[in-house]
Length: 164
Image (cartoon, rainbow, N blue to C red; front, side, top):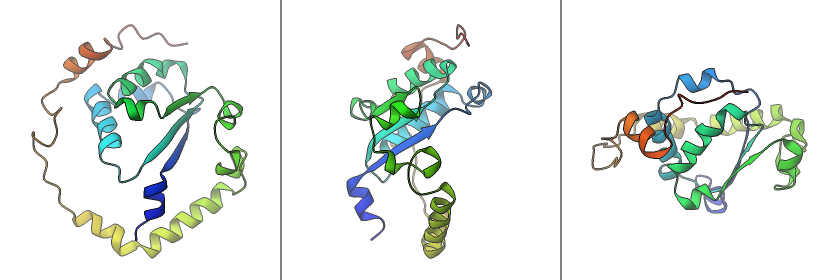
C-alpha cells in the first residue's frame, strides 16, 4: 500500500511561478521540454486531477503554449494558468494551500511531515535507485526528433519572443 488513496483520487498540483526568470528558458532545449512533458503525461504513477500555475510571467507564454501542444487533450484540459492567488482561490479550496498562501497548515509543517514520511520509507526510496528500466527507440516514440523538428512543427521558434 504505497499511497493508494492518493493514486486513485489524484493530485491537484499548484506551482507559484512568481520567481521564474528568463534565464530558466536558456537551460532547456525543445527536446528537454518535450521529453519532460511526455514523462509527466505518461510516467507519473499518479492521477493528475488539475495543474495550476500562478503568476506565470508573460515571457513564458510561448513556452507554456509549446508545453501544452505536446500534451494529450485530456491532460491539456486539466492545466490552468492564474494571474494571482485570488484567481486561483476561486477554482480550488484555499484550505488545500499552505498557510502562507491562504491555507491552514504552514509550509514548514508540510515539509516536516514529508521528511518524516521519507524517513519511514527510506528503504523503498533507496531501492528506486536500483530499479532498471529498458529504454530504446521503440519505447520512446519521439526519440528521433530534433529540436528543429519540434520547434518548426509545433510553434515556430523563440527567436521572435518579446519580453515585457
